[in-house]
Length: 370
Ligand SMILES: Cc1ncc(COP(=O)(O)O)c(C=O)c1O
Image 1: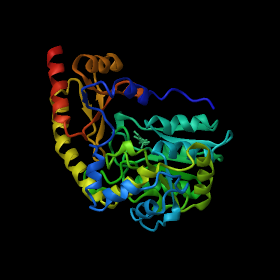
Image 2: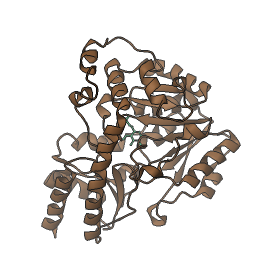
Image 3: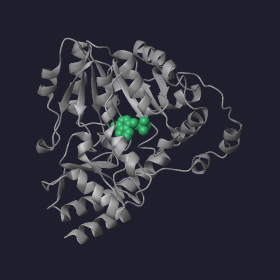
């Protein structure tokens, strides 16, 4: 298997644990294990007694039960729990694709959605969106990309890096187009439930199309990436079975303590989501007015979901050097768009409690440069 370096993770790996202020994180504010255990009085004792043996490969029954309750018309058997969402991406592509197959990937995107697909030897086409037309989805372009051997269309909503939701009509048309050719829709929904207006939430792809696979995660909306737990959901038993067969070669099963804590957290997810939505709704206007004040440098399509957004960086200079200068001299971590093949952009994150402080540091840095 040949795979390109994961530039997003490389950049974070270099600075995430040394930079004082994170202004580009893709996840919302986290919680301690104590805070999770406090959600249910008996859980502390149960957690201490929880066996650290192997668990069921498709996922612990109690966890699959609670995950299935998050979707309409989905049973526990329609779920495959994965050791992190990242494993879900790896397993799905490698279980289903071979050289000779064709995949369409919505870009810019979280890099593994593109590079893991390429690493299978399948031919990959990008369904590219761009700032210039407001990150619109060009359905005619998608249709032109389809080939007789197209097996999977990957989409991501709410979207990393723009923080934008796909419109309901585009979402329906993508699934309709895929259904008319029997193509699998792989829908990355790791930011689901963090729509800024809950009324704008789309159905999960697995709810509306039998050959769709929805990808879910503990990491983003619920702020629990340290649990390293995700899931694939599909009504297509054969797809899930093939992913399970592949998972036997990657992790066999997920971590028993993580499955316990994830089930607990998801039973109370309204509490976690509400707290994180409040943070996001408090921080986003600050970031938006900051970008307006610095309109000489930035412009963006204001996000409507998730804790991230993607601003265009107007100066002609090198955005990577700019971000490295900011992190080295102000201790503020930004993510340069180069890691998304979007050199004139910067990803911002506004899901952390101390985001106003990080923004103030960045603002002071810009003042010191002018
Ligand atoms: C859109 C998207 N999908 C998947 C992942 C992987 O998530 P996890 O850290 O839960 O493996 C990420 C992480 O940043 C992401 O942004």
